[in-house]
Every structure is written in structure tokens, then in C-alpha cells.
Length: 412
Image (cartoon, rainbow, N blue to C red; front, side, top):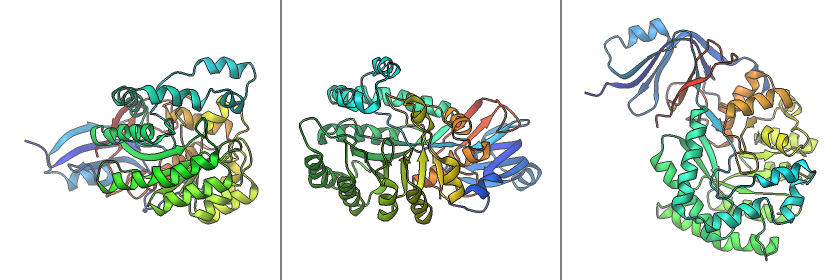
């Protein structure tokens, strides 16, 4: 007989709530004092949502007669919210390991891109791959992310560029949403690059007049539900005007704006995103001071990607300045063929070492703030009553210790 409740994690040395008062995000001051309970327990209901959080003795008394499907003694261990990866490109075919040698020899990202490598190389292989092949590799990648503690992952299309392949990628993401125990926020990124043989204007028109209406039709029929729209706003890719047109058209169809900006060149992407009401902008290595101010005022999250700056030898995003100016700072792995990292703990480590974030700031950025960047901080990113019971246990008494993940419980 099934228990009344799905899960009891009891007597944790530390239960790192991250938030305790329903905060949608944490700014610098909030991240400095994360909510923590000691010698505490948490109860997850059969519906996958948290039913109680509190001191171990109080929870034991409150649920003294209750039955649980699973009870885990967390004595001496630390419990955290499931980590949130706010930026990934995990659906693709092909391998770009050969490009690493080119980078080591001094070739820049855009030089490789213009020579037919980079995104275009992956697009060619992804267009040829079957849906089943793409799902098989995607599933394996998600499983690796989950083992490293990620329980909610943003997943982009963008290696199709034509409507047929973009839809193939989005169907693969939708299939994983429905069949795997990991949360997914799906992103249409058809404007990831300008297709060969087209201009940026032609690609923009195709997206607005063909891709987006088809996505709306598939949403209404219940076949594919996309959460976000993304554009690679960059010199030599989609300029500010094309980016504006695509993002506005996506917003008009009900998609949340969450796009690439100010990565390789200062494009005023941050100013544009703040103006359009973007939920989040990623990269921002070349963001202007004015852009930082605009994002802070608009409560537009900055999704910083330390793996990308590391791999491409770019200057580091200005995490400290953003935090000081009141920007909501989130983190993502930017998992893709060019930056193959599926571990948010590694991302957090790089954020601390290379971007000079504190450990608490990095944890907030990889939980509640990353959830906010996806528009999901009402259900994810902290351990609070009513939220999704996505929890990880680390085999140490403190989140700052070098323990390893021993459970990843995505219960939705």
C-alpha cells in the first residue's frame, strides 16, 4: 500500500532553504544570508510538492502517525534545492572536438563560425539526424545533468535553422518533458545563426511569418509547448533591429523573452531586453554600464555562463558590478558542442574563482535566481511549502564542503 506521503528527508545537519519567505529572487544582500535550518526535515507529498519544512523534532511530532513511501536519514548531511541550469543547448548531433585544436592555435569563435564550423557544422549534422537519434543522445545528456544535481534545465533548439529541423528538435524536447523525471523549460532558438544562402533579414522574415505561426498552431493543438524565445544578437549574426523584430513577434505569441546578448561585441542587447520586458539575457561579457542599469531597473535576470568565457578565452562577465548595481544574477552551464559541461557545481566553482562571486551568491544564482530567469521561481529554486519537491542531498554537513551528490530527487 502506498504511503500517505512520498518522501521524508529527516534530521539533516543543514537544510539550505535558500529562501524562506516566498522571495522570487535574491539580490546581493539576500544572497549573503541564505535561509538555513539546522537539524531539520522536509516532507514531500505524493503529488511531488513540499508539504512541510521545519525542525526535525517538530516534523516528527507533526507526522507521527503518517506513512511514507520513502524515508531517508540525512544525519550529518546537507540538503539543498535541486540546482537549476538556466541556459543549455543539449539537442544536437555531430562532434566539434576538432575545433578545440583550432582554438588553441588562436582561431576566434567568429573565425571558426565564418569558415563553416561552429554552429553551422552542428546544424549540418543535426539536420541529417533522425528524431530517435537526437532523443537518445539528449536523454543521456539530461541524465548526466541530473546526476550532477540539476533538476530543472532550460533546453534550446537552434541547430536546425530551417523549420523542419527546429520542429524536430522541439519535439525531442517535448518528448523528454513528458517522459523524464527532470524539469524542462523549452526555448525556441531558430535565430541561433543565419542559414547559409540567406541574409539576416530573410531569416528574420521566415521566423516571423512561418516559424512562429507554426509554433502557435502546435501549442494550440497540444503537440508542442514552448516557453521561451531566443535570438543570438551578435555582430555578423542578428543585429539589434532583427533581434527586436523576432523577440517582439515571439512575445506577441505568448513566449517569454530569454536571449543571447552582448557576448562578443557590445550590441546594446541589455538595453533592448530591458525595453522589451525580457525575463533574462545570457552571456553579457560585453554589456555596457547603461545596460546593467537598465537590467537592474527592469528586473531582467542576467544569466552568466562562466564555462563559455573560460573556453573561448573571453573577458569574464562583470558579476561583481552587476550584483552591486542590483541585477538578478543567475548561472547556466551553456552546455553545447563547444562547451561540454553538464555540471552546475563546476559552473558554480568557475563563477566563484573567475567571476569572484561568493559561494552563497553562486548557490543563489544556481537555484532561485536561475529559476526566476526561467519564470519558474514560484515553483522551483528553494525549499519551501508548496514548491516542487526537487531536492539534493550532499554527503557532507555543509554546502561549502567537498561532498558529492548522493540523491537527486526530481519528483514532479
